[in-house]
Image (cartoon, rainbow, N blue to C red; front, side):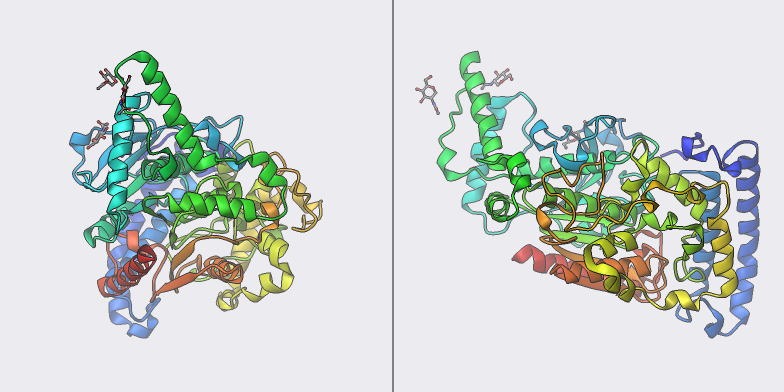
Amino acid sequence: MATHHRSYNYQASMPFAREPLKTIYVGQRLLTTILMVPFWVLYYAILPRSYRPRPSWSLKQIVAVNFMRRIYKVTERAGVTWGTRDPDALCDNATLKETRFEWVDPLPEELRTGIVVDQQVPFKRVGSFVWPKQKPAEIPDCSPPGDSNTSDIVLLDRSDIEADAGRVPIIGIFLHGGGYCHMSAHETSGPSRIPRRLMQDKAFTEIHAVEYRLLQHAPFPAAVQDAAAVYAHIVRRHQRKPSSTKSASSNGSNSVSNDLDKNTEMSEKQDFLTVDFDPAAAKNRKDNKDIRDRVAQAARLKGCKIFLIGDSAGGNLVLALARWIRDEGILPAPDGLLLLSPSCDPAHAFPESPSSYVPRPHASTDYLVDTPEPRALLQRTFLGHNPLETMHSPYVSPASMRVLRAFFGDAFAESVEDLTIRQLDAAEIDRLRTMASAPSTPIAETPSWSRSPTPALDGAPLERSPTSLARPIIASPRGLSLFTDFPRACIVLGDAERLEREVMKLVGAMERDGVDVRTVWVEDGVHDVLQMAWWDERVRDRVWASIEEWVREVGEN
Ligand SMILES: *[C@@H]1O[C@H](CO)[C@@H](O)[C@H](O)[C@H]1NC(C)=O
Ligand SMILES: *[C@@H]1O[C@H](CO)[C@@H](O)[C@H](O)[C@H]1NC(C)=O
Ligand SMILES: *[C@@H]1O[C@H](CO)[C@@H](O)[C@H](O)[C@H]1NC(C)=O
């Protein structure tokens, strides 16, 4: 859980990210920020409430937001990452109070299709911190790899569970926030406040917090691979056997029958996920009936409800995982998406031209900073070897203007544009525009995509795998719209947060594609309030109550 001071590639063109400037800069910012605190307290204590960023805020909230804003600026400029953990490191259960640490095998071969496949990004085993510490009785054991006799016993146990399955376990997969470069899934990490509260309120049977690879460790699609591995693991662990194959032998007394068992078990697993299914053929089909039927069958055999939960960048990863599951049509869909201030337009740091850079709203009320240069560099590192066009893939920026325009046309893309931006003062807009067009940034170069016309959905030939990263195009396979067949979603956002506009676009686009969306507003809320050390607890309690009511509703039908 150490703060890392290592240098990464993306910091090469950031002067404050190099020593000795880095230490001086960080030290100076920290010191002045601490010195500012008494000043802020005095200033806002004297002024009438209406002068506060939001009249409802307490002095403590104002100080917290101002403090965090200054610290965030340091983080972005100096490339400091905090609260991270090595994703390859084992975590000793004895050091954990609320969770247990488990390894999940790399994504199985037969599921390696679509955007998760990348020659330069290897599939790896994934660590996950599982809430609660003691495995609940209704959770089946995981089959240890290669131990076929044990897994057979587990399979039989599982069908016993199935017999009296009135209520199935509610499983959460939690993907933490932190801009793909901070934080971890460890129980002591800030975002763990989210699974902790959901478990305390008994909204879930179990929550798996995934230690996915951050951009320091591997570029896109590493994080999606890791999240997908945990999803596949949970689906398999809870799979019910189709009744026709229930007679599987549980003999394992000699090596021959051991091998037979292994084969039976393998084919059962493949039956479940890929029975009569040729992914290559399905991709070329224009109608989705095949895939719908097969996934519906898989969903009936899924002995649990799965919710994907993510805050901030974790929300971005939830959207990418849900898209991969839908696009590939091999795994059954999750039951719900819980998106907390999801980041859904990272392409924002890459405007089509420097002058078209429009700052995000609520500069004066949120702690998130709009510093396009460091953001753009971070995003570039996130993409790694992928072409810059990948920034505009629906897998990366599902609510960017370019993506919305490609699917819904200009009218829709413009109509969701909110008005808050016009309330920013002109000086602030100018300052940000100047920053965005600074000659040292990659934004100033002419990106290759600006020379080619926007690929339209209907113009995209469907024979080519549309999710291939080799030539990313803004389209969905099988002619689906941007969010067709996405699971029900609960989207939480603050009305004082910088991501308000992009999240509203996300909500608009999902609803337009027929997704059942529950929007929960955090009154006078900044970005990602649920993971903050504290906030106005009355406000937060209301938000938790709304979320948990939604989880119950989705869990019950
Ligand atoms: C931690 O405990 C769980 C069960 O409680 C076990 O499955 C897991 O393998 C243990 N992890 C380690 C790293 O020992
Ligand atoms: C185990 O194998 C023996 C023969 O090797 C067979 O008679 C017996 O029925 C098998 N048991 C089960 C449960 O399949
Ligand atoms: C199960 O398999 C393991 C090896 O994987 C073996 O040591 C053990 O004896 C087997 N158990 C039974 C009951 O066959």
